[in-house]
Image (cartoon, rainbow, N blue to C red):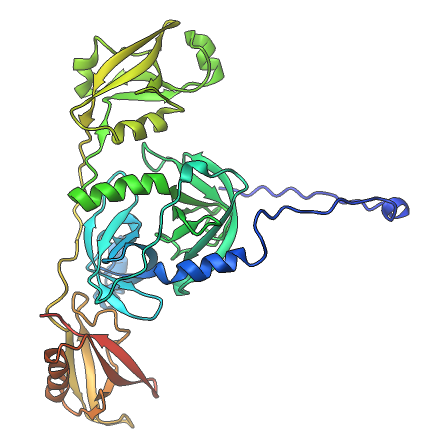
Length: 453
């Protein structure tokens, strides 16, 4: 992929510059401080998503020996998410949490919760998580993404490169973008800076409503930063998917079993259609035989249950939201003749990829300890030998080789002491334990999550 840069030439006519009367620029569609007010209202609902992936295996066998030690270590990555229900339902991208060993949700105040997957459909890059907080969390409100216009102000909040609650602003560059991710693409394009780690985070309008989920970053070549080409899934699509996931744990989308293509102006002239737009039927799928009397290749679908069909992706979205087993009335044009036909809505067959979905909160701490003798100038304490990525302490920030000097205020000098102190804390129904750790000749306190009952 190449980047085309065109340089403009600005010429100042110094002899006449002072005589030119320049109009005042008044582009802002909101009062000063409005963006800061929105951020203050919503930022407590934006979450950090931390996921633990299985160890990566090199594709080249020659590299496997060199990477053998490193390959035994799970890989931790960071994304974003947001609260959509105060009981603990969290929205994020599917690509953030699929194929994971463990998922954690971090609130802006630093509290971490183990998360489980409620559902993540194959054909949509969204996932619904559940956490179990001990309090109600502030939930965000969805806005109407269909009302967005190019030029509207939008605000993105997330954890790019791990910097939590980072705020960027911009405008809607375009709507209904097809980036060929799925049959339903309806992306909002924005120039608000979106980077790695923003995935799954919310895109707000100036009223503080969620109008999208930041999902895709486009950059030329091997460049990995923002170039002002970010894409978000519209809130109206999210609303539909999340309502189905909450009710069924799956989307249960409807479909029409035929392949369609866009109708351009030239294609409309060629087939005698009234004009561009709609969805041209190219072929009937394997399950479309029963519709052959109603629908034929070459038909152009212009309406779905009385609603205008903009393009094939719009038709797919309308069919997805229709009740499976019901009927839809299609307005079609066949060889210049306008007619309507009734067709059945079939169920979309999802072939889910196998995923390592996390289960309920872990019952084990997931830490193995060894005695640290205090040799070589190291203090006596307890060394962290291994960290189980599925244990409650996996996302604590502890590293193998850390020396634990204290649990709470109690000095520990043996693995048995450390385990007993942590177990006593868990038995007292405490969610966290503070441990004093020495690493690289520096000491710091780290809170670690304790296992549930």
